[in-house]
Image 1 (cartoon, helix red, strand yellow):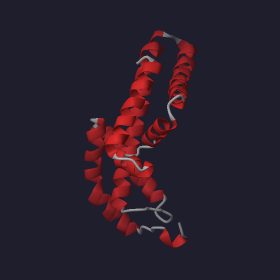
Image 2 (tube, helix red, strand yellow):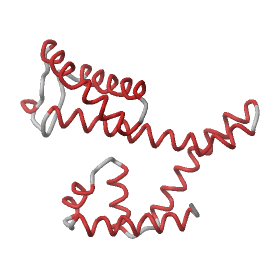
Image 3 (cartoon, helix red, strand yellow):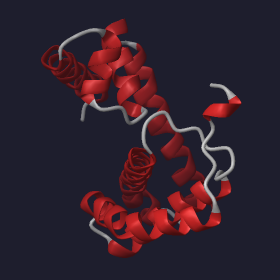
Amino acid sequence: MKDSDKIRISDSNFKIVFETNFARLVKYANSFLNDSNLSEDLVQEVFLRLWEMRNDLRIHNSLKEYLFRSVRNKCINTIRNQKLVDINQNEYSQKSGEEQIFTFQNNSDENIQLLYRAIEHLTPKRKQILHYGLFGMKNQEIADIMGVSVNTLKTQKSHAYRKLRTMLEV
């Protein structure tokens, strides 16, 4: 991307973008998180990043699409991190002292490593589909990149998940 493709947002334009989109983005985030305070915090983080990058922002489509995608990705990461915390919460509460912290951190890393090791045993196409999905891409986007129909992609994704459940005994 050329330097001329960068978007620069002035202070007055930033204020307009913030006021125009903040409430909608919080509502969108809340549809994922069901926690209005967390949703507001998350959207504020997105706008903080936008402010920090206001002179060097590179957006391929529209600013509105960029904001919604950023909020969606932050929500997905928040949910993923919360699930890892929940998985470890039972074991964490049964241990004590320094051992708790060590076990909690190790299990989070261990679970992630187990998942990635299991993904490596999938066929190349299914592995690629899941990697794109982990990066927050939608089915249509993945299907376009891979040159397959959305239905084929969904079938492949379903088979991949079934195989992962079997391998991980979930």
